[in-house]
Image (cartoon, rainbow, N blue to C red; front, side, top):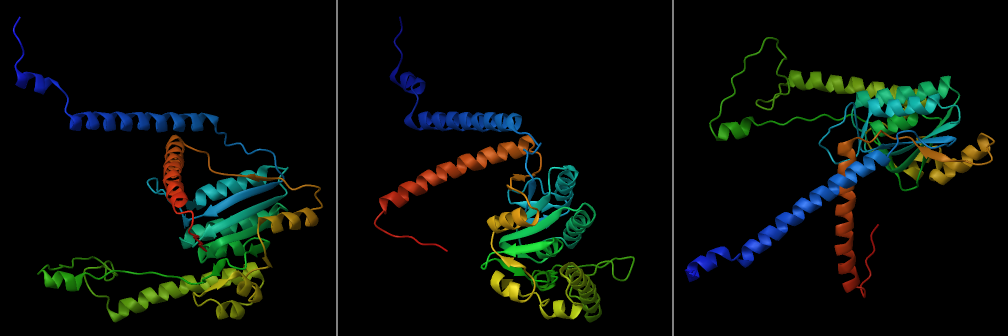
Length: 323
């Protein structure tokens, strides 16, 4: 029997580097299937039918939009989904009030108006009490939504107000000049390329855009005045885009009470003459991708939390305070 040569033996023996590559790939595959299994399990264990409760909780978190960005991991509040949840709570005879938990900097003017109009309709026509509780932030479009409820509650440190409209554009023409790039303008319609980043806005175009923004701002002000039973002139005094902390906002008439969800519960218990308040969250039905991302996020957080805890424990003589 012929003996293997030394170089043939070396070729058949895995190197330490190849062993590590194999281990890492195996772990990645196992992790993927673990997340996949967790997502499927979460999906089948989830029901979009809310449990029994006499107060519906609807969260308005993140940027307010008309439709969801499917690839975003950030919180989003889409008008279509929020309105569906409001209608579902409206149709439930057991629900006596709807509590809106707001933690949003605002977003689309159209989406904000759609949600605000739906809240006002339910509050007026269905005899259901609506309360907004502003957490960390409820500004601009989010405040517009809050203003349509029967009552606004905010923490003394909540950021609210910011009644204004913003638009922006970029100009690349100087950068193009630097690199010898020319912009050839071919349009059918004088203002078709208004706000194009490839050329400067003319003075006339700036006035046109500013007029449009002012129109939206005026509409915003009138809606706040109507919703809050304030005069247009009083709203204009605080409609310069500035934000206010909850305590100051209360003094200005933008917020009714200082407190939190517990404050809302006690208020509802008394005003609706209920023996007990049971809050049940109404939320968007969870799809497979949502379940998978949620599982991935939770697992990733757990890993990060474990690493962080180890680091903190190793520095247990130090005191870390955050606000």
